[in-house]
Image (cartoon, rainbow over all chains, first blue to last red; front, side, top):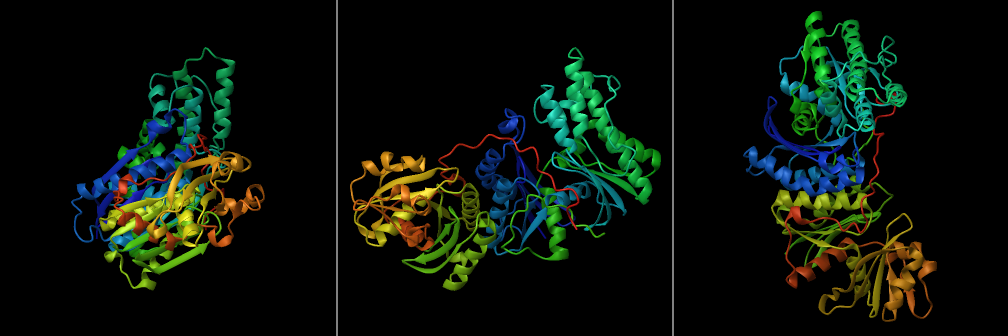
Length: 333
Length: 242
């Protein structure tokens, strides 16, 4: 079965064709990063307009690269229906439904968060359950226990800013540019992570996260010591974020008896987070499922893979499916 | 040529399919932000009602605005998807010319000024004269954006009387626009672009030699720059799910 995936939840316009396996036949991502860079963040109306301009050629490219030229070219269409920016989600959702109608194939709406989980599954097909998933992006910071595909238990999540949001805000404050994650990561390489002892809110307490105080602490420190090298501030900030993420993730794996930790989301591209996760998983003798860099950022292969699974387990979505900007995991308990 | 018409530029969502005459039309006046939920089922319904399968549709006609940005994205993305999937072309029509065509179909002989509610205390406006055969409107001025208070001075004042004003903006700002004896505000029947009129106008235009566009080339007529604000908060509410 070949599934066309469509992803337009934020600032990447993406399409991919995935076959059983799941095996990626093609994956095309057109990034809008340059469009939003001058504003220091994603501008929703600009994103929605750009998706509408880019999606048709991106899909054409994905079909061509997969040699999907039959009638119909694929057996199903999957599109992200949430969470994300509503004006962006609507473009991919509407286009996806229309393609499914035109080809007379099933349509399935996909939860973007479940898509990120499938990004790791695409890279690591031989999984053992249960797994703890640490999903960290610009919109989410959440720890989930996955007892099997589709069976999720919420362990904890951020009570204020998402980790990726903290990276973006601190990068903007430090003048490091956009997107903030890679910018801080690059700058931190030259800095001393122990130069400033930034707060680690709630680190040893439960599975919830809080990053808004950390961002405020960075601002206050720079205002008090303007001569502080930016690299030291960036490195110390990054150390504080990653320390909290890794400490909680490690404890979650130990507490639940999980067989491994799966990293997902854009912040999973952070080099320090990847190193630390691989180090503790090695020391604790559990699997470290760290997705390839291409699978960390938003892409449509993960949407097609999640759609393939949802279709097989829950059947197609109705044509009346709407976009849900606040869609979350559906938890079993 | 069988044309499928897609309408979702304002609060009203609808579809129609026709070949010469309109064979099926579905039209739903809805609340805001329900475009994605209503459009695909409306298309499916008109096809079932008319007995025309999508494989027989030869062109997509779509209302490209001006109108609600959410509705335009849903309508244009749906048109692109159908055109791409079926390998056919798209004819873009503006909300204003569809409203004007409906006014001329109803028999109005003077100038028509369609007024579409743009929200944020603004309206989108065009000026049309009656055309020849098929009543296809002739555009007298390109679509523009105005404050409702300025419409009489800036648009209606330069029109040849009598003037018919129609559309959801005309209904909303009726008291600002009406001038007994010279400016008539149309009622609810001309309040929203009608997908059946859209299909008839598309057929008139195609018959007059207006070319179809490829799916990639069709884009909304926004008439307003993007609001360059950053939306930092896009996360699920704490405790959501279940």
